[in-house]
Image (cartoon, rainbow, N blue to C red; front, top):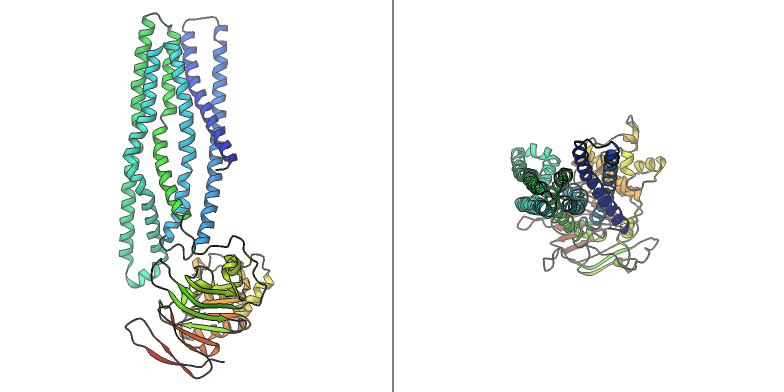
Length: 571
């Protein structure tokens, strides 16, 4: 927290203490006023108390408003900074740095866990400070009004209600509180899987199984919520019991003091009501202890994301990226995702120059997507070199490299927005004319022009309102709008039928004719348009194909049959 936030939090705690102090003093002065009025004194003897009641009433409302305003201001400022910090961290980690985090669980950490941390300021720190200050003042007032016995009883009651009861509630809820946030993340992840995969689950008959898994997580979360509710009920009931016993103790001490003639009945009434009012401040501490436990658990989950190691580190003094044209080179590249684990890439070399297209083919797990991750600076090399115009890519900022080397993924994400807004993700300042030009380059201009709303047409959730080919072309248009010098295409035709693949590939080659292109594909049709074919298997290069009439051997998954495919490169 910054110094400014600490001052705001201190102001919130001070305003809270003043509001609570006004509430306690209001009840004490009211008791004094009633007891003194029963003696039928002159009205002038009551004027100060009457004015004090009015002032304390206004002061309680004003200071409570100030406390709420300041504490919520601190909480919301912290929430805003926390969410921005987590988002930036996720940006730095994604995608290679997040293998152990489920997307639904990450969403729960970003929203629910961050929300839980606000209780640290609103329900924990501010009430605890106010209770400490007001409780001490109430004990001193009771000592002054009815003597040591009454003050000792009130001090013991406040300690029991403000310390022992919170610790008891904390012990009752600690285990459940530690499990609640992870259970909430698990449930969010399973619901996200259920919703995002609903179509596939219906096709393959897995709906009942997925719903059953989500139901089990829901029951676990419900059980934890019930334990939390039991602890919350305990936190409400025990303070009331202790408050009642303490007030009876103060009453007995005051009766003895009045009976012995040590004090008058007027201070006795004021002291009794002071003791009663003091527990209104202490009574919130058990709930604050429970909220603090949840906030600590949520903070630990947020910390796990913030402390996750970055897969790619930016240099402390980055160099500016060359203006271009760019030549990208991999030499003997080796990549492993886990220390001591197997190599995902083992000695892979390739070169991408302007106007040249290189195709990577091979079975699943061969390392094709890992090559793309290296070029897009999502993962660093274990050994070997990644060069841009002969200089190490690690000398430049990763974001600068990604501006020069753009990617079009196998399963592009389209936001639930218009076609134009999805394109402007790559270039927020793009004009309508630029959008029309890039749509024309990928062959979408006639289709978009036939729509009633044109480029303002909504594409639906993740492109549900468009076909697979249109979705892929929109993603390609978005890539072109970002204007990278090198383009990585990861399975651009994987979601299309055989009739749609040819036209799309023809449009892709036409749109990217002057750029360096890496084409990752399983589909060997259309590779007569590329300059080089590299066949990968288990992270290694099996063979390279240049020229025409060369036969490519493409192995499939281990133990499966292989096949011979004749591919004619155009050069």
